[in-house]
Length: 192
Image 1 (tube, rainbow, N blue to C red):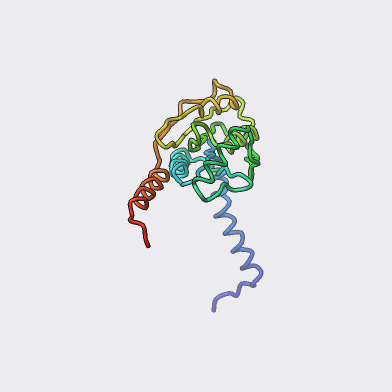
Image 2 (cartoon, helix red, strand yellow; image 1 turned 90 degrees about the vertical axis):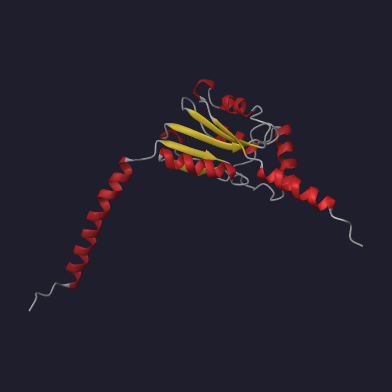
């Protein structure tokens, strides 16, 4: 006949065993605290793909930059709103900020080019976070017109000597798709 273990003692043993297994893993994760932050804004997902790749390669923390009020779903409406915001110098409020920005040693900053510059929400992010002395590495997607003055925008908010050589990629699928579909629709014969 096997000895009977009181239910309370069994539960305590199970808890302590679980804690013993979990605790070393938690300590190991704390020791590997990410040193890099990947902050990005992406409307169509192109910049998000790059952000996720950087996060994996650098074991970094991922932070999606979002305005408090989302940009319109419609491409043309977004273009018009962004142009008006840029022209007026408006910086849309952010949905959230990185509370512990000082704990990161390096910041990767990703965004698409809008109207030959960084989107207004990126200016909001740069103003809301003190990046002084931190290496800032931009990664940018664009529709074929290049970087415009976007790097200058980043350098104006993070000291110029800390902005590292970044990465840019032509990724104009949304614009190209809209133009192609519009041309197709325009070529259809009118209906009676």
